[in-house]
Length: 312
Image 1: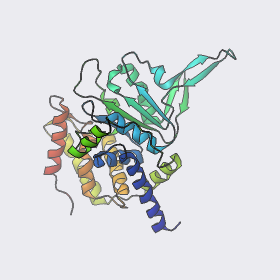
Image 2: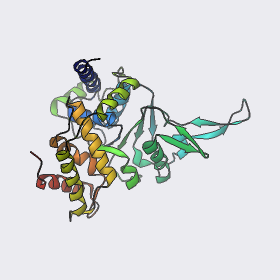
Image 3: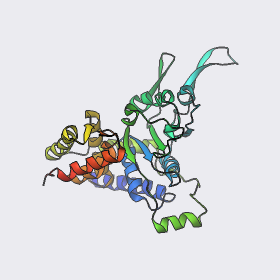
Image 4: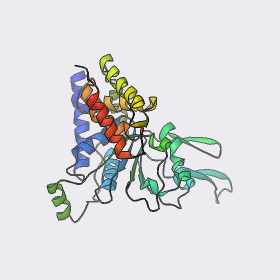
């Protein structure tokens, strides 16, 4: 296929994916775009906001639009690791032991209210999110390809919750906030009788996603833009407002996300604006501010960006 035709097909697929999600999630094009960026970058998404602004609606709509298999896990305090990854059980028919996969064995897994389960159960997702496999009873089991976790949590409701450990947060490529809807979008929700739960058709297939991900890997990053990204990472490590700066994994996550954003916007190269747009969503949950306040970490990353000269 000629390159212009391939580019046009890619743009059409991405536009169809975004349009399908926005049929349900209205008035939030930026959040939808960034979620698609995470999907194409092969990363996981943490949706963090107050209850009732459409986090679960967005997650389920993305899962439906992506096609493939989908499972939803409602995280509660009594959920066990085996309830997520699966367990070895005795088969009554044969009398032998066999592995029974848990709900994590799907292309898209919605981890709803992930901070309501215990740290032991939260840790059951670590290997799955990082290695795309799970280990049960000494044996490894590969997860489907592609594999995406979309998790939700309510940050201000601390009753009955367990804060996500740093290692768990580090597995999420982006942490996004829905925010309150605009006036007309909220009017549409009211007239529809609440957030719509209508089933939407898939806009792409798992094979489409694999092809698009290959396209992301071919996006180039000029050395000057790489230096700008590395300067930002170094600045988080020396800033007095932060107890701990971004790790190398954080730098790699930002690099990967910027390539995906450029790809979604039809470019074959990353520009400094991509870094500025994604820095807070990628880095703020990976650094620790003095006082360990999440909003202070976000503000510190923003102010570092303001002070950091960008390449021409």
